[in-house]
Image 1 (tube, rainbow, N blue to C red):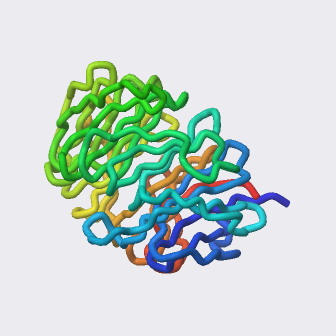
Image 2 (cartoon, rainbow, N blue to C red):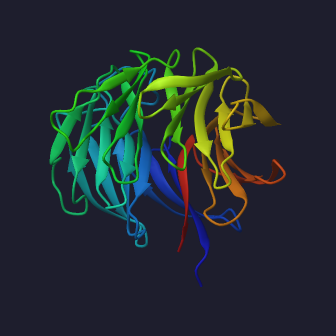
Image 3 (cartoon, helix red, strand yellow):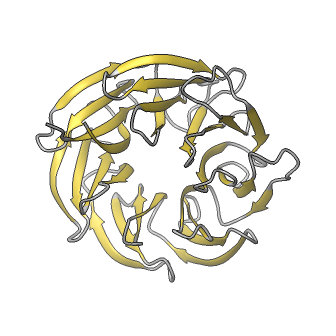
Length: 309
């Protein structure tokens, strides 16, 4: 019988794991080289693609990794490693509606494209991010436009990976922009600025800040739920906030026992899964903003996704 399964990168245990959501049991684990971080899955739920960042956090120095790991989700096997050298510190990953894979090299500040990720052995194109220390990026559904979060230049840049002549367009929403999410119509990009302790709404057409508002301390990530609410993880405050899309003001608040690293939503149920830095995933009822239980994990749970297996 099929069951809800949480796919989870555990970056300080250097692995990719499968958890049964109902019982919290860790069903299997696949060992990977040190410090895997972000991952995405294809639309069919066949493969997971995990980026080898290769260092613990963005604050750690070193060359990092230059590989994407292709994992068969059902067999739990590492199918192959895709070597992207000389592009290193692979972090942000996205996949578009055509199953084309995009990967961001933080060190080289370049956005790479694998048009057929299941078989490509190298990127088929690359464009400059237009910023420095490009850590994460938002991608439109059709893959035509990406918005890069550049930690050290304190910019968000619009790039077009399929247009070789397009010059990146920069916007300065605040200090150390890191978290991101697009509105449903993709006309607004919401950004969390860690050092400014602010949220910003950027018009994606003009790349100008339309509205900004204060956030809680060290707001790391911002996510959009199916009902349109924005959820922010406040690393310094050890909390989660619910934020209105129009005003960017806080409409809900949950104090946490540990710092939230990442969050994912259940595709059909009113649940969210909060990766915490005390080696647990909190299962959150998004209607009541109450934690219903915890799933014990290995060291440093990070990005997750719910799939049916």
